[in-house]
Image (tube, rainbow, N blue to C red; front, side, top):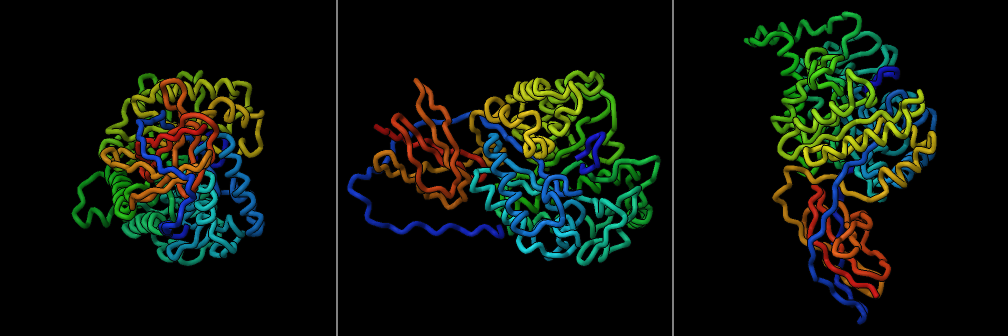
Length: 492
């Protein structure tokens, strides 16, 4: 992700669980079916896990498979204990793959050599381990960076090997040409492939479309633009570039929807929407600079959310966090969300980047919940792994003390989810579900006074829970995030 003083970053196919066979139940078990209305305030709580330059995972390209797996488990344990519910895992940092693919080679960040298998499938393992911990997995792809270094040796089927005419050096990196049809189709095919073969919860792009301009260097796409004009194209070059990006976004969303309509697709753009938007804001113009028309993506329904990178403090008048988060939320559409990106990496880099600053940012984001600001993604997981300035206790005890499901997809607003079938034996309750649609989670509510308060969220593959004395209700949540009614449970 793009940070001013940091390097720029900007399961296998789901196997259906077999239905439980009918067995004789102990005579003390009672079937439960008393339904109650339950709900809670939804919030996406995500962290970016960067693989480029070995920033987060794996910490080095010299680690064996078991050490990498251990690192991943420790990272997911930390996210769970800090109250997160989503992980954004970088699986395509530079036209490569942190998973087994026939379309692109294994990333050299795994082994030091592109195309070399690390001995396991990192994305499959991430999905398996994260879902056991009730964490969503969003596969994060860089759309067009072909290499973060001019020196990286690339192997087939990397696009730089198969179509070198559409990969260009730009400053210190190599970049795919978004105007080339083969580049766009490769991106769409990769996103479709991940969605089809892995039980991911989302497909996620960062802010790198055309490269951020460097020292007046012109991006060398003269040949593809000339070919467009020769075929009768009438758009000016800047508009043509924007349409190249728009078409890719539109086509990726369609491919994801065709494969699995419950997989969320979103983009994390640069944090400033445009000059003087909101009023008084100034800085880089992404509409003109990298040809990102973020409002069009939102207005046309090509994304389920935008996660603008609001990497500025609340005391910076030209990029004021409160004005920015308000603007983005006010320009969300039709139940599509804003998940603000927050720069946790800056914690402690100067006295103003402190817990009080992050507390204020979170409060400002949450204040716009009714308008669509329904979560945050933190850049990046590193400070949590090192527990910088004891930040973990702040997340556990304050920021994310109460559990929450991520918001339901806007496209599923008319979906109906059946309540679970519960069988109680003393304090133990067994859950089953009859719907054919995949299940994300069970939500367990405790009655407090006249209200049902969310007590915990359980993985969908869990089949039993033990409850203490009291009045409880258990609901089922679909992969789209839609929750059923709760089934009442009384525990003496």
